[in-house]
Length: 325
Ligand code: DGY
Image 1 (cartoon, rainbow, N blue to C red):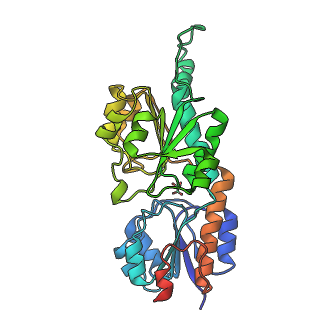
Image 2: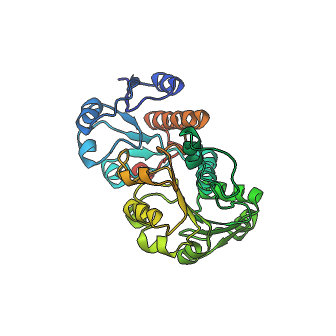
């Protein structure tokens, strides 16, 4: 009997073609987000779900999908998936690491530079017809070159962000659950420090940790108060890693100078008071969104799903325990 794959959101045609060569595919090229009941109905007899971070895969959904063998997330972050529930049901879960590192690092830099040099504020000023001529003190920003970059979360993407700092002659500090090998540290010219030291010393603090209970509100009012008043915070990690209420307050009171934010608590909703602030650059969760990278993510998710359906170990299996059972 042919396998059935449910793809929950619009994907690139070549990813669909790859899946169709191996299974019957129920797509959602209309890209209407599926409410939980609709997803459960579509996946009731599915062998695989290829999903996005907008889909919640939890015990309730899994209970309604008795044939399910694999959930292939089109994202490296997988806090939308209850991994323990998948493992308990013997369902493989996969993500898409590696293919988005450089593109996401590029975007963290986009936000750093944009917030430091007030680019969205400057564009609004110009578009609104406010520019009457050059002024010495117009839209003064902060320098990125020769500044101190602090990276919280030094996995593959954090390291890709650090590599780019060399060209800006920056000092790099980092904190991470575990320290990098001395040789890797030397290659990145990065120094491992405690989080409080990083917050106090960095001119730019970039967050690149996965979201979990342990990282919920990792940056709140107390952490923002430790930062320099000239500092810039960049969140390209996950909504919920920053307490957005505290961040809005800190930006409003200039506890820190500026922020660049790609991810929000409760997306696609976000704290509306961000909109009234000039010192924040806002983006709708697009750090990995280059055409090449989003395609590569979809293709990798398809590859993971097909491998699982073919009885092979998927390249990016998150819960290898299911193969041992
Ligand atoms: C990821 O891969 O986790 C990104 O947030 C997707 O955009």
